[in-house]
Amino acid sequence: MKSIGRILRLAAPYKGLTVLNMLFNLIQVLAGLFTLTLVAPLLDVMFGNNKEVVKPKNINVNGFDFDAVYNKFITWLTEFIQEDKPKALLVICGILIVATIIKNIARYLALYFLVILRNKSIQNIRSKLYDKILSLPLSFFTNERKGDLMSRMSNDVKELEWSLMTTLDAIFKEPVTILFYVGSLIFMSPQLTLFVVILLPVAAGVIGILGRSLKRKSKKNQEAQGALLTFLEESLGGMRIIKAFVAEKIFSNKFSVINETSTKANIRVNHRGDLASPVSETLGIVVAAVVLWFGGNMVFNGELLPSVFIAYFAIFSQVIPPFKQLSNAFPMIQRGIAGMDRYEEVLNADVRIYEKADAKSISDLQNEIEFRNVSFAYGMETVINDVSFKIGKGKKVALVGASGSGKSTLADLLPRFYDLQQGEILIDNVNIKEFKLDDLRGLMGIVAQESILFNDTIASNIAFGVAGATQEKIEAAAKMANAYDFIMQAENGFKTNIGERGSKLSGGQRQRIAIARALLKDPQILILDEATSALDNESEKLVQQALDNLRQGRTILVIAHRLSTVRDADEIIVLEQGNIMERGTHNQLIALQGYYSKLYNMSISHA
Image (cartoon, rainbow, N blue to C red):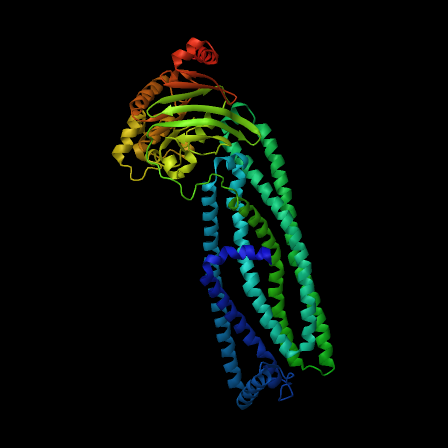
C-alpha cells in the first residue's frame, strides 16, 4: 500500500478531479446495482407460482431496519405488478433503460475526468523532472548517460501514466464496486456469500505474488531500454566518425547485443504480466463454480428461492470483472512503481551546487578575480592541484597546456558549474559561493570549443538568454563576430532555421554564431574555451579584432591549443596535469625556453 500511495501522490494537486471521478464511479455502480436487485422480485412475481417473495433475515444497522425498507419496496412492487402486468412490464423496461442511461453517462463522465486527471498529472511529472534536470550540476551528467535520462523522460513516464490510471481505478472504482455488490450478496444470502468473502482474497494474494515478481523484472527492463537509447543517441551523434572509420559493422554488432538484451528483458516482463489475466480468470471461475454448486444445493433443499439465486448469481457475476480488473491492475502498478523508482532517483538527486539563503547580489566586477589554492577532482582523479593566480579587471589571461591538463576544468569552476574541493575562487575578495548563482553567471559570457546551438532561427540562437534583444543589437553582434555576411546570404537571413545542433551550418559558422551570442550578452567576463579553433585564418583574424575591441573594461579568460591566438594575453598560465608549470607573458615564456616554448614551437611547426 505504501508503494501505491507513492503513485497516488502524483495526483494530489488535482483533488477536485479525483473527487469528481469517484462521484461518477459511485453513481455508475449504484445504477448498475439497482437494475440487478430488481431481478429476484420480478422473476418471482411475474413467472413464479408464489405471490410472495422469501424475505431475508432481519438486518439492523445503528437502528436502521434494512429488512423493513426492503419489504415495503417489494410489497409495493408486487401490488403494482399484480394490478396490470403489461403496464408494469413496460414501466420496468423504462426504468431499466433510464438506469442504464444514467449508468453510462456516469461512466463516461468518470472516464472524462480521469483522462484530464491522468494527463495533468503526467504533465506535472514531466515538468518536475525536466526542471530538476535543468537544476542539476554538470557533474551529474558526466555520470548519467543521456540516453538513460531520455528513457526516464519517455518510457518511465509512460509507465507511470498508465500505472496512475490503473491505480486510480484499482483504488477508487473497483473496490467500491466490489464493496457494494458484495454488500448486496450478503443481504441476499449471508451463508452463500461467506465463500465469496473467503475465496476472493486468496485469489488476490496469488495475483499479488505475481505482481512483486513483475516489479523486479520491470526495473531491469526499463534499465535495458535506457541503455538502448543511450547507444542510439551516441551512434547518431557520432555518425561522421563511424563512417570515417568504416565502423558500421562494429556498431551494428554492438547494437545487436544491446537490442537482444533489451528484447529479452521486455519478453520476460510481458510473459510475467500476461500470466495475471489467465490466472485471475481461472481463479474467478473456480470461485463462481463453488458458488454455483453450493447455491444450487441450497435451492434443491428449499433454503433459497430459484429467483433469488438467479438474482444472486447475476450480481455475483458482476463482482468477477472488477475483481479481475483489480487483479490485472497489480502487474501494471508494479511496472509503474519500477518507473517511479527511476523517476525519483533523478528527482532526489543531490543538487550539490547550493546557493546560500542569504546569498549576495553582484552586478559588476570591480577589481579582480582570484583563484586561491584551488584543487579539484572528478571522483578519485585529481585534475587541478593547488592552483593560484589572479585576473585583473580588463585583463586577458590565457590558460594553455596539453589536452587533459585542466584548462577547461578551471574555466568551469569560475561560473560554479562544479564546486571545488579545496581552496576558493574570489571576485573582489569575496568567495563566489557567497553570490547568487544567477547573478554570478550573469556576469559571464561563454564560448566553448564545441558550439552548442539549438534547433531554431539564427536570430533566436544569437539572442539566446538575452531578454528583449532588438534586431539591431543582434545584427551588431553578428557583425562583430564576422557572421553577418554569411547570415545575409542564407535563404531567410536571420530567420533561417539552423537545424538540430546547428547541423545546417559549417563548423566555422557555428563557432561565429556562438561568439555573437556571447557578444550580445555584453558580459563583463568572457570565457573563451578554444573559441577560435574552428575558424579559418581570415575569420579568426576578424574575430580576434572584434574580441580586442571588446576587451575594454572587460576580463577575458582564454583556453586554447592554438597558441598564436593568445600571444597578446596579459598573462599566460601554463598547465600540466593540473599544476602550474610556468607563467608570464608570451615573450617572457619564450625567453625561458621551457615547456611553453616547446608547445609554441610545436604549434608553429604544425601550422
